[in-house]
Length: 167
Image (cartoon, rainbow, N blue to C red; front, side):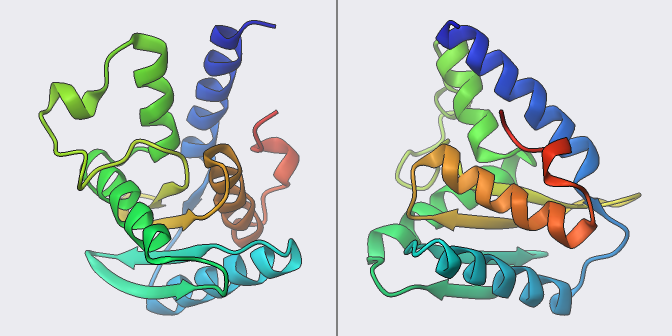
């Protein structure tokens, strides 16, 4: 299987994730619960990550686990900035850049110091409203960061993981 096919397959699956991983409503309590869920999933894997959940531009949940560094929080911030600007998962933005040979960040002249198109941040979407925030994980390889977020979102929404997980 070629790298191009893998990218195209992941992008198709991410489109499905964006279509399905939508809440009927999402508030501060839901943000807190999502953050706690992600923290527990990381603990269960013995993984050290930084978890951030933002709602309407405000940080509602932020936790840096033992074993992380300030760099993880900075990566989370940069990935989240991409989601808040484009309303697209940071992993998808990076995959498009890799496939197309040019980054939307460069096309838009966005500073790389403040934006990172690496996996781990996903838009929080509400039916009939659109993107209301972002959920971000940083500390694992980018595809794993993305997958951890998707796993938690699917669980919160009662969607079987096999229906939305990357292959």
